[in-house]
Length: 315
Ligand code: PXG
Image 1 (spheres, rainbow, N blue to C red):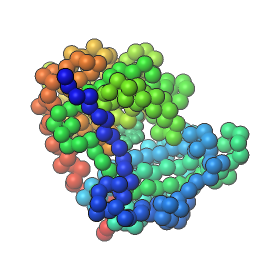
Image 2: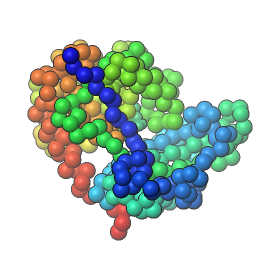
Image 3: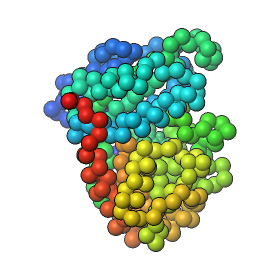
């Protein structure tokens, strides 16, 4: 019998990532100051904690350069505008704070979590009571899925928890309110799958809990449109660029579970997961059961692109 596969997605603090960094505490940017992680604390009256009222970005840096920083900041500001939150810094101040946080932690490759909460208010949910949003920046190392998962591929299951519809909370807003996705993640864990396929209210596939999805059929790539309930993933946009560069047709279209079952190949994209193949969905083997040729080319090119350029951290 096949061993149940452990789910391995974690973004660990640097001090858990290996003996070399074991003693090092992270330096966190918190409301304009750099503080040791032990002192980086927010109020119990912060509405980010009380109500999930806030927004965030997960950003990677590779080889001393921040990957697609402008796109991430643009999405952060869009999320802020959508929820009537004013980011208490300019874009250039944010960029400098972010780069300085990485420098203070002496990192060249890693992951940034940028969070803007509504800030301290009272116990009522009215954000008008909150005087000033809080900005938190954590720069750390990142633990990927183990390298073998990129060769072997992931398993996914469709979960009963539907992706929040745009009429409730638009999934394009990268808010601190991830309970919808957390519920889906719990279902995937219970089913011992690596990720959860989330459907929208119409029963079409929206995305996974922290990744966008692509299916490949007869040499073409298909992905759900943003209107199906997907986040406008930055990694997703890189997949579009690579497809164009490789001359592979890519289009946005509604995708059903059936389309995944009969696909030749399937891929997920996300900042932490990068581009990773899926080889099983709801117990059905996808294609040959091994990452296919387009997936492998996509992953290889993605790796190259991440190492070229990016916003320089140290010059
Ligand atoms: N869909 C959702 C719902 C997401 O939260 C993506 C797609 C991929 O977007 P990007 O821009 O990263 O290509 C996300 C990404 C993580 C993590 O650690 C990522 C996200 C949220 C929470 C954790 O991978 N967002």
